[in-house]
Length: 221
Image (cartoon, rainbow, N blue to C red; front, side, top):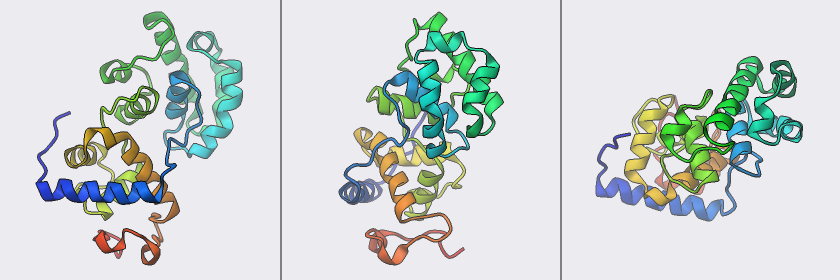
């Protein structure tokens, strides 16, 4: 993914915002419960258009019955559907989980691959999911995870002029402004801030520690 140029001031401002957020949320981390790369991949596939809380409620039973890619590859579609039904679009997600498990078993020895190209070849995996897995399971900062919180806050903070729904454009702007080693954690920080303070409908701007440096783009719209 090509990255647009950013000015020195833009990069400096992004680093300052990162430092402030890092101080505000020192324990920020991936909200999807997982013990290994396979569980994180499965949980992230399930998280599409679904809350992390709902996913975390569904995955314990799912992982107990299918703890590995090989075990999941042998599952019946109907059994998977029952276990992930509360995650929304469950039939399609169950289908993708099974197909991904088969590929992991047959082509990768049951292991989750650690490159963007290989991950994007798995059913149900787009760039956002691949970034989650690479950053949190392998410590590889290939890009920035842009979910609804990250997209909304990036616009409000004036870090991008892209449409909040254009995840690809926002990711390009963010990677141009932030040091690579911060990319994974930056997403966690914005997600935590979005849930705690900078909410979609009623952001708590008056009590926000970033107020003085935030242009509040779109807040009054």
